[in-house]
Each structure stands twice: as C-alpha cells, then as structure tokens.
Image (cartoon, rainbow, N blue to C red):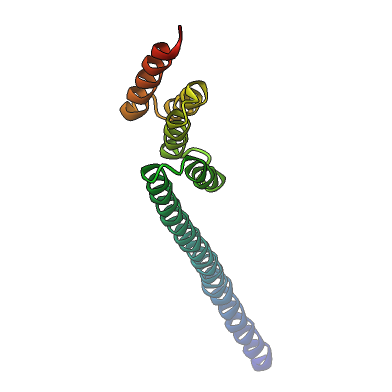
Length: 145
C-alpha cells in the first residue's frame, strides 16, 4: 500500500513539474522568440534608415553639383546630374525644377516648362517652380513674333 501511495505522490510531483514546464517555460520560450524577432526587425529598420539617410545625402550633394553647373552655364552637365538624382528619388521636386531652369537657360522654353510642371505635380505649393514657369512663359512670348 505504501508503495502505491509513493507512486501517487511521485505522479503528482511529476504533474506539478509538467505544469511548471507548460505554464512557465513555454511562455518564456515564446517571449524570447518574439524578442529576437523584434530585435531583427529593429535592426532591419535601422539599416533601412541609414540607407535612406545616405541616399538623401547623395541627392543633396548632386543637387548642389547641378546648381553649380547652372551657375557655370554648363546646362547639359546640370541636366545629367539632376537626372541622376531622379534615378535615386523620382519625386525630387528640386531636380525637376533645376532641369527646367537648365533648359530655360538654353532657351528651350517648352522643355523647361515641362520639367518645372513635373516639380509642381509633386508639390503644388512649390512657389519657385511656379515663378519659373511664369518667367519661362513670359520669355517664350517675347521671342514669339
């Protein structure tokens, strides 16, 4: 009889241990798994932000280079550099505007208006592009007999 009692006690102890395993270890395992997943996600987000920042720096550098070419009256070079910006970010309103100005300085008014209009389609409140379009239209009219 005592042997059966010992077995029952032992079985109860095993059940208690199994309950601890089920109610403690499994949730902890899930917790650690989720934590690792979140860490990997955060690392990926951090990497993406660094890449985005790097691209923004490159964009800004190229925009400045394009403006430098415009100031040197190297309009074709400016257009090339600003087109490179658009391969990085197809929504860069400054690149479109600067291409428009380069074309305008070559007296290619329609092309200039086209590119400044693209800048406006990205940002309808982009006053510089609006001013440039008005200026180009005015210059175009002066040249039309």
